[in-house]
Structures are given as structure tokens and as C-alpha cells.
Image 1 (cartoon, one colour):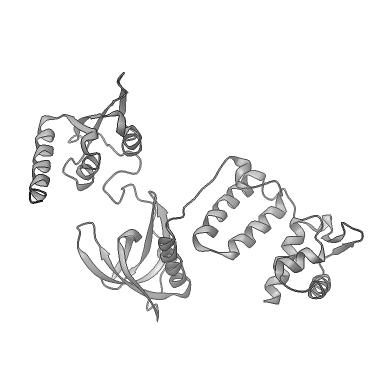
Image 2: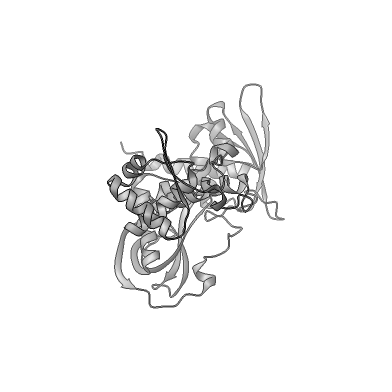
Length: 319
């Protein structure tokens, strides 16, 4: 604990011109006498701490001893701080906060706000707790087990050696070696349930290729393309939708990279080509709009939508 405090104190001194003994004592929840001993220990290690007298006195590190600020520019430091702030929120990682302190010794004016950039990869509290549990299992190299809902809506028990957490397409994923399938697999965390950590160690030695996780795939897990949600393949079907004014925001979020035409009444016309009009994602997206969206073309998709709605009516026929 003392070593961690000394290291943290060094970075605090690097990041500030002068710090009083009382401020340091309050920061680390120790007595001022302990701070005096810590300062002596830092000096004994060869780090030149200067003592300043007076009302605004305290301790500081000689300017010549501080890190060369040309190693990283303000943009570099700000970008790193932005990422670390977001990581520390999700994982409650004190080490990330310590690293931010170190980076600020390079450029005190650097922060995420200075570059007009902010990033939040956090989720609901319970979701963040799952992420922390998974990260501990990865760090400790311990096996986990859970129930998983596959893309085919199958509920399957999985036992996994977790290797990496990945954030992509707005969702968190776990990459690891699945003992159930005897192969490397990627799992969407929102589809996990009954997650159970264990003290069981990994049985395999995983290569660097696998511990770093897979490359970002072109294909979205829901069947969409990463670069273009609506591809123009030879078999693609052109779809025209009419969106009412009450669903413009949702339509702009869901249907991007498509042809858009706003009407005087505030409605929106969307035109695009879709490779697989049979996909679950396509129909679930349209149905999620309720009466706020209408398939204008092609006629066969209108008929199929009508059939789906009639099936839904049958489900709710008995009230």
C-alpha cells in the first residue's frame, strides 16, 4: 500500500506546481507526519522534491526533472484521457485514473473537453457489474459458465475460457474459447444469463492471435453490413418506405446510408436496396415502428407485412 501511495504521490507532484502536506494527507487519508516520511523516501530514491516555504508553500518536483512534453502532443493526451475516463466509469478502475494523472503531467491543459470529444461506453449498473465480473475472469484466467441465446433463438449452456471484451456496433461482446463447442467463439453479452464465475483455471495456452480477439468483421451480428447497411447486390430488392412525422428520429437512427426525401407535411420517404428481405432484423425493424411506417413498394412485401399483422391479431384475438 505504501509503494502504491508513493508512486501515486510522485505523479501528483509531477502534475501540480506545489502541493501542501495537508492536501496530500487528506488525499491519501494519512497523517502529515506520514507525508513527511514519504517525501523523504521519494527524495532518497533520487527524485528531486523541492520544499517551498510560506502560506502557499508545500512540495513540488524540479521542472527540469519532469517529462519531455514533446513525447505526446495535446491531441494525443486528450484522446487517451477520453478513453480512460470512459473505461474507469465502466470498470471502476483506479489504475485508469492513475494513468490519467500521469498523462496530465505531460500537458496539464489536456482533457477530453479541450478536443470537443466525449465518449460514454457505460451501460445500466447491473450490466456494468457483469462487465467487471468478466474482466476479472479474463485477468485471473478463470473459466466462466452461462446460458446463451443464439442467433437462432436456441438456449444453450456454455462453458468458456474468456479472453477479451470487445465493444463494437454499440454493444459489448465476449471473445473466448468455448469448451462446449471446442472452438473460439464470440458472445453478445446482452444474450447471456445465469452467468457463473469459477476458480477453475484455463486448460489451454492461447496464442497471441486469439488473446487479442478477432478482427472487426464486416458483418453486423444482426445481419447488417458494417460499412453499408443496405448493399446493392445483383439480387437486392429495392424497398420504398413512408415514415410519418412522429417517427423521424427513429427512422434517421435505423436507416442511414439510404436515399431520403422529406415531404412538406413533415413525413419522410426512404428508398434503399436490401439483400435479404427475409431476415429477422429487417422485419423486426419495420414492425418496431408500428403504424408510423408503411411499405410503399414492392407490392409483395406489402402483402407479407399484412400477413404478419394478421398473425399478430390472431395472437391477441382472445382478450
